[in-house]
Image 1: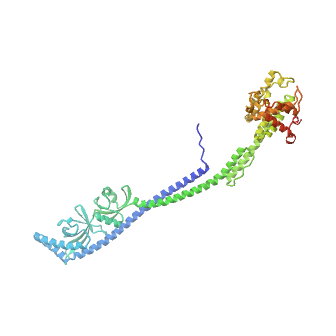
Image 2: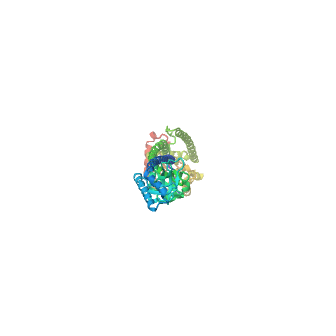
Image 3: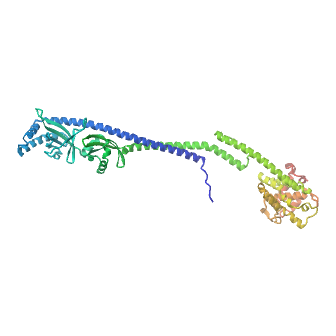
Length: 562
């Protein structure tokens, strides 16, 4: 058997709709805020990189000027100039000892400079860019006599004088010319700083971002690990654009070229996702509290709204249930006053029930008239039984009142008593109206009328409650009644009542074959047969009803007051 599911209550539906709507609004707000934060962070990272570029250029320009000033002071050293000039003039003709002495002289002077200036190497080159002497921590990276070309910075750049590639290393150079008193140039003094990881870290501190130095598509130095450096090398074509975004280590990064010197580029990288993570986390925390507050407010508002809607409907539903239970359809439901719609519904229902009650009253009156007409027509077949069904009905109701039956049960008894002999329609007139005593066969025909009456009523649905009275009103407590031979309490109470009332009226009414007997005589006969043919409590109730008949029931038949 398939169980039909019940729809949810209005309160649940209201809460569900409000919560779903609130959740959707919060979800949309969260997405919009996250996207907005992401855009703002991306713009902020780009702005920071641009500011870092300007800061880096300004700092490098200042340091370059300081080193140029230091280099210019050193370049005026007469001993150094004399050694360089002598080396240039006599290097080809002098022996190795003289050249070594001249190199030592230059190296000594450069060592004094390197001790005062924080550079990796101080190098003197001749007019052909061949290294003559070098001093400093990385002086050995500058082989003497080797020509090393300086790649100058782009025109207008304030960052570097240039870059020099020595084997696998790159150096940034601040170069100052060495000029004699007559104005002739004999070489240059270079202050070299290695472009290594240490330099990249210092550059990153200035840029407040990761830095990468690349030359010819290869990483020279960076603040990244080696795996990321290889990844960066694969993205060289993208980096060549100067600025934009790349995906690195599954995170979006903004990049910007700080400066480019020849084939060497200096980049700053900043993780957009990492920068956004903190802002998104803070924003998410804020949105979470906002969401909790919004959901709590939505819950309270939903409960209030649901109660505002559900309470009047609940009161209306309760009133309808009480009306259906009591079957008092004539009562008008009070208006809730909560909304026009509910009041209009209530008013319409009241009008509808008034119409239904009127129609029901008309229907009841119609079928009651039909029942009375049917009973009257049945009684009219025999002049001796005229009014019998009506009198039995009145007597049965009087007995029921003594027994304190409910109004609904009294109504069943009243109509059942009116119809108790309906089955006699099927009894032939020669039997029903016979003026003499009946034969055994004729009595058997008469005994068929309860079952026949029950069969007739089964065809009328609204008379189904009266069938037990019609079918069983001739059953006896001793089991010798008909048609089923029921005993004692197996016989319905209503049938017992009609049985006694029917017998009383028959005794007190005249027949063709005998005279009517008085009420006391009839009661005496009923009491004599109580316990066998009649139920004693029903006979007692009839006796009580007859004793109060003049005051309590003026409509009782004359035979009852005899």
